Length: 415
Ligand SMILES: *Cc1c(COP(=O)(O)O)cnc(C)c1O
Image (cartoon, protein in one colour):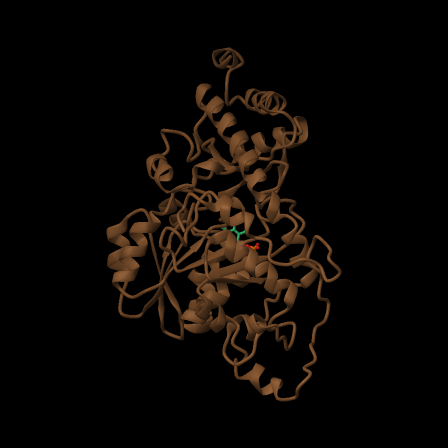
């Protein structure tokens, strides 16, 4: 598989039809499953029979609808297998607890989702003695130097939240592989755009809650990886997804499976809108950060690694310096201009915006935020594709003007 052929993979995503010939897969609502021959039961418990052979045991283990969504996710990411979880955090914590025992270590990017940061920085050391060394993931020498004999995984986001730096996945994979450590990439910000498995990652996790769902109505996640790793996660006696129980509901799996077919269209729409708005913001002198801009520090690398059909993603940031100014801008954008909503999360069809330092990254210390480059006035914008570009630009410009961030005359320069 190459990084450039996801459309072809997506065309093969459809594995299942409904029970009565329905064009959508059926929802299997059972929490437990009968066996015809009593001898199948021990086979299931010993792993000799399983969903790959059409044998199911219990819904927290495998459910056919969730299993089928897992196959769609595996096709999306180009991995052998995948399984879905109740949330992105369920996926991330499952992966970590599968690979690490008490006293083991993780090397992780210092710019990750706040929940992941809190899990690695505080929760895991306190509960299990699993310690994380945080590094600037763009500093490859620092990554290599941080890996010790106890390191059990290297963890990064493909595009970091909220700083939008790109992980050099092929190089990170080389470094990790040379040390015999798997590379796990959280690809929540860039489904389809970046394909971490094709770029060398061993494990890919997603918060389906964001772009893949696309409607901010579902909390869900997935782990994509080798057949054997997914098997370990789901092992009846030792698997963390089995024993900790972050299980996806089959109704949710059915809903998500009907959104994956239009994920490519949505990613393109988010990317086009973000690109157009960011170019205009540059034109009027706003401090904007977006991987699609030539001035972004990883723009060239992004062009090398991305699948060119899907743009540069739907998230950009505007740095207005101070938290008060950020709040003033977001207040105008939501309450005066109806440009979008002051809310955490991303990947929604409408625009969502939040001040990262005081919201989704508030778990981090001031030094941690400083090191990761999260300024107090950083507004993260997950751009929606509703309305027209001109309508949205007028709204955004009016809010920037009203909050003194641009002068009225500057608009003409972009015309
Ligand atoms: C939201 C998010 C998560 C957590 O996902 P949930 O579905 O909310 O549990 C993890 N990683 C990233 C990058 C996210 O944006």
